[in-house]
Image 1 (cartoon, one colour):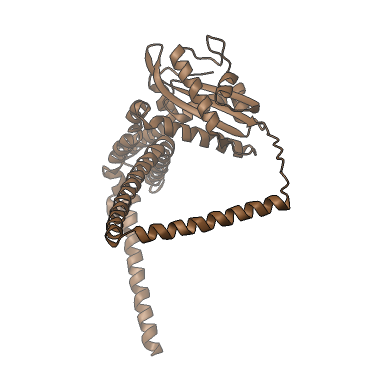
Image 2 (image 1 turned 135 degrees about the horizontal axis):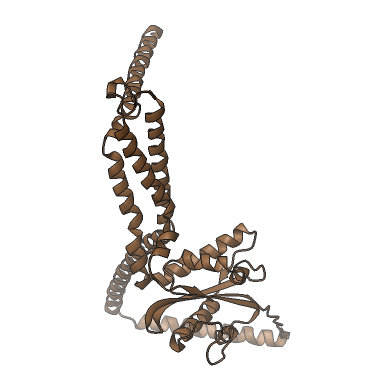
Length: 363
């Protein structure tokens, strides 16, 4: 029995060794110059690298039409608002500060300010009528101890306006102030000075602490007894009334009511199921657009970087192994591909945004 097991183990080991040797041999022919491939690695000799360049070009620059047309969609405001809150809180956490909580009243104040900017065609903390940022806090009934405001206009991407605020000392002071506890943001699209654009208003605040004193009325034993007696009488009357109503209902009416109730339940269940399905579709689409706005560029950057590293390694193997036997055509072709891959890595989303014509400003 043990001899049979040993024999099977040796057979498996032998087969595994053969498979491993075949795999190594194929890798050698694919990447390393040797006599089997006439010192021309199949990987460099094939059209894989040119096709890879075309694929990466499409993958990277598909973001261009997205950046141009996405700001005009209905979901742009919601997604930008969500991302700006996340970017702010991520940066605060990295600086050891507490994350800001989104406050509906601050959101309302930011929306009122954004609407006023579009209605009166100004881009400033103070309106032409002299209304300060704090005026909109009052309109939204937000009581604050400290407050701040950042403004942006004409941006194509959330990271663009956030980075611009970060590069400005006064705006960054708002982003990283330890005095703030809450945040509110409004992103509004509209006509500004004859052009369709996007306004973002970012508000910060810490609410005042309300001291409420509650006075409790002492209840005398007589009052307690009177209340208890009243509740008991009411309960007895209610029970008698219910019994009377039950006796008056006929069997036919009960059947009809049951059938109607079942139909109502079925209709309600169908509506709930439809609403849940629609919610899932909207949530999935929202997630896709958010991914395109935040993580897509980082993903393409990583793919381009790994492709560059792989192509550069293949070039080194081709040059350094059998250094006396060289094929200039393969070397020139690979060097050209590596050069383009370096450009792909250098041209990130921020560079693409700067190339696209748009009027962007912060205040």
